[in-house]
Image (cartoon, rainbow, N blue to C red; front, side):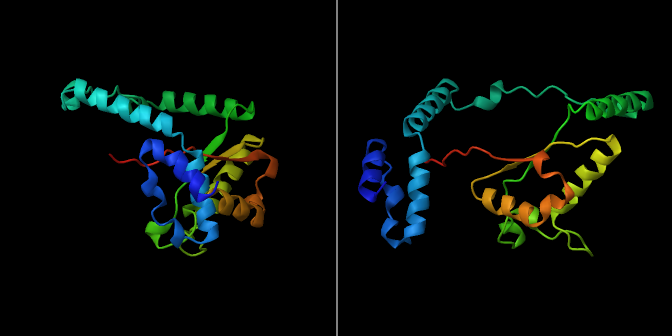
Length: 196
């Protein structure tokens, strides 16, 4: 989409300001912005904002008065029971051996707060070895799969910002010893930030 087509998409939703600095962007940056705008379902965003406004009115601005604390999901006392721990470990091992367990890594974050201009998982966290976080985590999955005697599928959720560099990093590092066909990358969805 060119600038005019984008403006036509944005105008019905009063979002033309998103292109305020369009002319200052490089052609590559313009393409990235255009792709982001194209992916936004502005009708859905408008509907969600309207629903939020209705709910806010119905709550009289005091939603906390109706809030209920969450149920306790994990009872700490259970973990003090040695028989329970052994039973849970045995059940987990059986599921691992049966191929019914996968590991998942949420890897959508950037390392900017660490002063690192790449995905957080690429950060050299090993105190002496300077192994990246991805390597340390992959080695743990690999060790566990060796103990179980079978491969453990590794699902790695990335973001739009981290997907390509993460996949390339894993390829460069030969998947840190994990079977390549057992490592699956997928991108998390994202929603636009909106204002009134």
